[in-house]
Length: 368
Ligand SMILES: Cc1cc2nc3c(=O)[nH]c(=O)nc-3n(C[C@H](O)[C@H](O)[C@H](O)COP(=O)(O)O)c2cc1C
Image 1 (cartoon, rainbow, N blue to C red):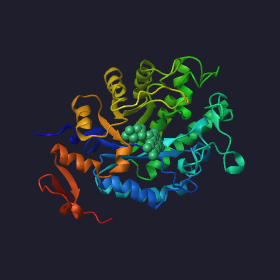
Image 2: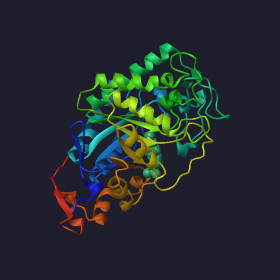
Image 3: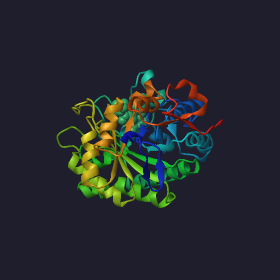
């Protein structure tokens, strides 16, 4: 009997071995944007652990687009080389390699969480942030610089250049970060966008930037490269983004050649009231899938194998993305296969660690 969580799914000819994705997670472990051994081992162990796809963390398309000075980046060609090792290892162990392209907008220039997580001032290594409108994220932060039309044009070019480098590095899935109160979310939410030009005001104008970036990236990348967008499907706040807006924007993104929507929510302001709990964002994934006719990933407090399997079995989403559960257990997919009775490919080097030879189908030996 096939277990829905462990059935393959295909996007644009890229077949993903199961429905489990590693959600993008900042590691705050780069210098000058470069990936290093930490990223190779972090991403690589989750590929060994059996995930269908691993989406590498929010990756700044410009230095100022990073959340912190320690965030990962892809603003220069020199970043490509090390990333090739990560994609080769990931793909070599059966997972699809993805990366999240990001600009943190008014939420940039912060210290890493374990260094206090506070806004960095210029003498501390911080920088001036940018946003659609000069509105601070919270009262204790200074207002960002309002982007000019030239700034917007440059930003689009930066996203496209980042996408080109990601493809050159071997990534098969590019995810545009349009969630969590970062720059592209700041443009489509009426709470943070008070512009009066063609990028503000009406829904069409607020949706314009993210659609233009998706279109420009799609035109740049190979036909077979999968394009995803992470969205905050609700601002959880009066006057903010609602699921109905999100369905319309998702349909527009589908027309631009986006293949799936990764359905997150919140984080535009410090005071949204988020009803966090198991599956709390799954209804977004279901609604977008049904009403906008585009594939979705569900994310947020999906921790248990049967819970994840039920989401896929119930046609609520095409993928489940896990973050914190994957920090606790990079081998979550192999353990879930064991619990659910699914056949799972185990690295041949690790076969003796698995109790059931029926479940543990030897994965082709890879030494690299
Ligand atoms: C350490 C950490 C770093 C994160 N970094 C990112 C990121 O780079 N991009 C992003 O879109 N979400 C990021 N998130 C959010 C997760 O991808 C995920 O949406 C969230 O944690 C909810 O899923 P979970 O309940 O499975 O942890 C991060 C979460 C954690 C715990």
